[in-house]
Amino acid sequence: MFGKRSDSPAQQTAAKPAAPKPAAPKPAAAKPAAKVPATKPSAKPGAGRGDGPPKSAPKAPPPKVEVQIDNGQSETYFKTKTTIFNALIDTIDLSQLAQLDMESAAEEIRDIVNEIISIKGLQMSISEQEALLQDICNDVLGYGPLEPLLARDDIADIMVNGASRTFIEVNGKIQLTNVRFRDNAQLMNICQRIVSQVGRRVDESSPICDARLPDGSRVNVIAPPLSIDGAALTIRKFKKDKLTINNLVEFGSISPEGAQVLGIIGACRINTLISGGTGSGKTTLLNCMTSFIEEDERVITCEDAAELQLQQPHVVRLETRPPNLEGQGEITMRDLVKNCLRMRPERIIVGEVRGPEAFDLLQAMNTGHDGSMGTLHANSPREALSRLESMITMGGLGLPSKTIKEMIVGSVEVIIQASRLRDGSRRITHITEVLGTEGDTIITQDLFVYDMDGGEDENGKILGRHKSTGIARPGFWDRARYYGRHGELAEALDAAGAG
Image (cartoon, rainbow, N blue to C red; front, side, top):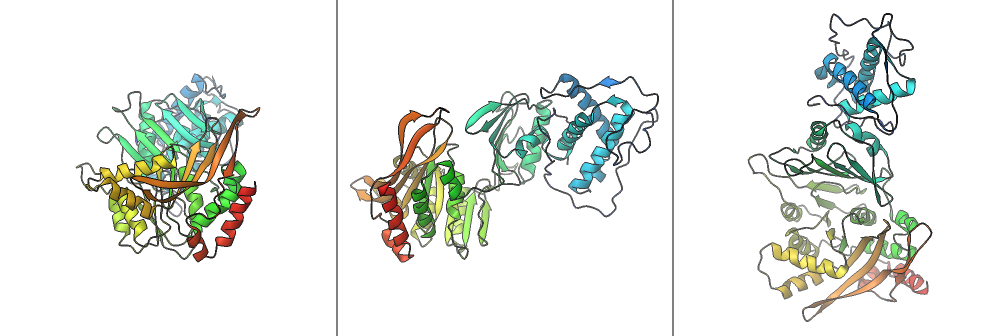
């Protein structure tokens, strides 16, 4: 369960250990037997057994070691922690520990570490000892040095570049942290612990892996020999409180009128593609759009690593599978989308369209699965259409370009463009309709655009606003009237035009 011994530096803040897979507790499970060498001095009675940190060292202790723990994570602290961690592994019975639930296992570790500190006569303040206890619990039961970062809700991305350098993204800006791993072996241990939770593996024979954390946060690992300076671990974190379309309005990502139009698009089962660059907020926006789906609709999601957080009661979540050691058993996104059509879906949602599955998604949109959605990487709505055509061509179907364009026009009704601006903010820059073809060109029209005024405020934030293009009756007007939402749509467009 825990792999080889490993230790990690002190974290900047304390966080609760997040268990990969809590084991079922055994009633009145015996505490792991301590295998204490005969030469080890006896601990003071009651030390570390629920009485908090030992108030005094045992009689006739070994020479006292001063431990300095600070935000800079001193070398003395690392050495002390390594000593205690190794003594813990020598003392505790990991097989018995695995049978306890997370809370009991953490309490057991804390008790034994308190005894070890008392036996070794280390002088530490209560706060220092608490930080050390938390670090060691994180190492054994959680994700080691990553735990404090995962506990912070203001961090959007965690980027580990080898054992000694870890970066985070906060408010759209990348910062270097003082979090580090003891060595690359410990980092690989943590990576393997993460990916094994979803039945995947990462090693020299399979050095690239996509996975997810229990909360849905997306994880990518690329290991040596492909990553030269040690494993590179990237975590795209999800906020604990799921964002809604109202939150996007508060953040300035979309105007209130634009948000109202997006709600109508989601509720009226209009086929939608969300386009944007890396880190532009496509998945967050897709989550917000799915909140307008009625609760009685059957929704099937297809993803490489399941990260969508739909709240409807009737959702089937599907996930691709990489090949096994023999190179067999792979299930691709296209396999999932094809199988969706046999599962009686009302809407199909593809987490990210990046290959030949684009053809199958368009077919689904064209055959009664109205309101299907997907995301893709592109920098503008026009580029999104070109990318879609290119991905269908990748499938090797040999379809002429005109046929592919007609298929796109007959399937996709709206493209929503998300962008990350240079100040780190995320904006919905276009709500664009796909109207038809004229010769070999697909005709589109913008309903809303984000106009940057070209200036910045005193904090360096880009100044701009969402504008309506003045379209009074969009192409999906009849669909909105079918669902009784045309009056609301007219009000939103009129309000945006007046603004």
